[in-house]
Amino acid sequence: MSDLLRQMKAEPGDILVEKSCDTCVMNAGVVCMGSGKRKDNGDSTYGMPMEEAQRMFPRGCDDYEISLSAFEEQEKLNGR
Image 1 (cartoon, rainbow, N blue to C red):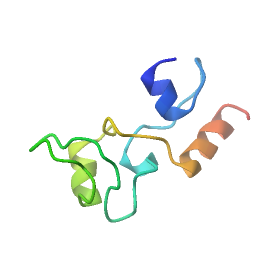
Image 2: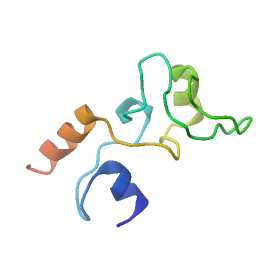
Image 3: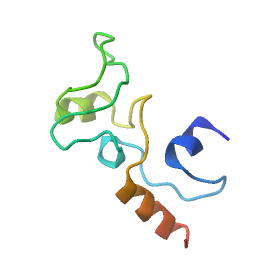
Image 4: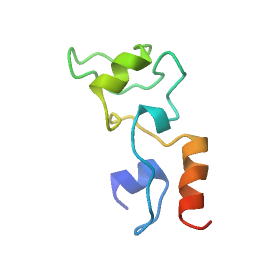
């Protein structure tokens, strides 16, 4: 299984929701709780302001994992 399908908890051929900070389980609203690596200085993304994370990682970072609400939406898109 590919890394993307694993991150999205999806099967081959599934319709996927957009991979972004908005659909990530590590999104705490105002800060990122992930442990990905920042592109500007290599530090952890943990505690970084969400607006900054969204600009830096428009398609999610390496620590991305789909949130429950996004997973439910994705499951509906796939008729489950």
